[in-house]
Every structure is written in C-alpha cells, then in structure tokens.
Image 1 (tube, helix red, strand yellow):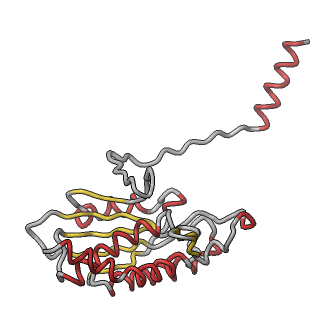
Image 2: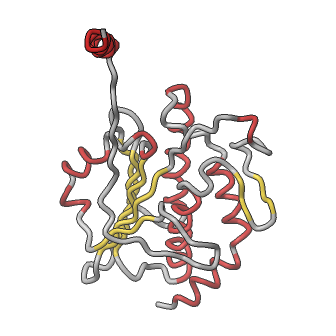
Image 3: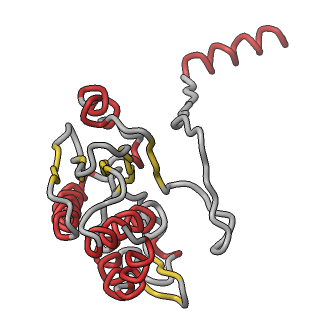
Length: 224
C-alpha cells in the first residue's frame, strides 16, 4: 500500500476538496441555538452522504435526544489495529456579526486562509481526516488499518449525548487508539501532537439575592 499514491491523489484533488469543505462550512450548524436544528440535520445528511461517496460503505446517522451522531466504519483488515477518528460538525454562534469582514457562513479565501465559522473548529480539521481516508480508498481500494469515524453535533454544548452512546456501544466503538484534530497548532509549519486528553471541566457560580441581602444586613448590624 503506497502512501505516496494517496498523497499524490490528495494534491491532485486539492481544488475539489476545498470546494467540498466550503460546502461543509456553509451549514450554520450552531448547536446552542434551536432555530438551527434543520440546518444541523441537513449537515448531518450531507456529511453521511459524503462519507459514503468516498468509499465508506458502513455509514449511519444515529438519532439522539438532540443532534445526530454520524458513525462510519471501514473494518476490512481484521488482523490489523483499529483507529477511532473523532470530530464534531457543530459550531459556536457567530455573534457579533458586525465584527466579521465577510458573512460567517459564506466561506471566503483570503490568501492561503479559508475564513468562515467552523473552518478551524472543527470542520476543517475533521475534513482533513475524511480526505485522507478518501485518498487511500480511491488509490489502493483499502485502508492500512481499520477505521471507525464518530462525528457529533453537540460538542459546543458539552456533548450531552456522546457519553451515553459510547457507554451503550462500547464493543462497536472499541479501538486501539483514537485521534482528533480539535486542539492547537503552534503555527502553519509547526504541527503539534497533544496527548493524554482527559475531556473538559465545566464550573459555575450562582449567587442568590436572598443570601446577598442576608449578608448585607449582617454587615450593617456588625457596623452599627
């Protein structure tokens, strides 16, 4: 199996891949805003169809209590390890809109950069993995390892339905290693590998007016 052939395919199809990425970015998949539910569903259908077109035959759109998961598999090498690729297709809100030089969901090329909401969190990075799979499948017909893709639409709201799904499907989601490209790079020519990821931590503080008034009264009594 030749990596050089896959790289040559990727370079030869760069313009087409860029156009497809721009189509991907055009979906306003803002998971924090229920008014975009239909956009999220449209994007999930588009992504599942794209995964089938590149050669991944086992593709599912999996409903959850909110936004669907997309799971795609190529397990044609039973003696080889399995790689799990994670990504998310939802994005943060684009407000304030007046700070954008171009509409956030009309991806625009500025030099070597593609500007649009989600282009670098996480649609662009996720699509890089998808195009790598395509490059191998279209040149060799097979992948060097077994691959499971798991793409979600709720990462930007804390992934409320991801863990329950993984717990219920531990066997089918089992892999020797997992990779995601939703972290930082030091620069265009300085890729970085982040390891030992442990998830996110969320904290909050709540103040009640009742306690605040009680504390204020106590302060006045002490000072009087």
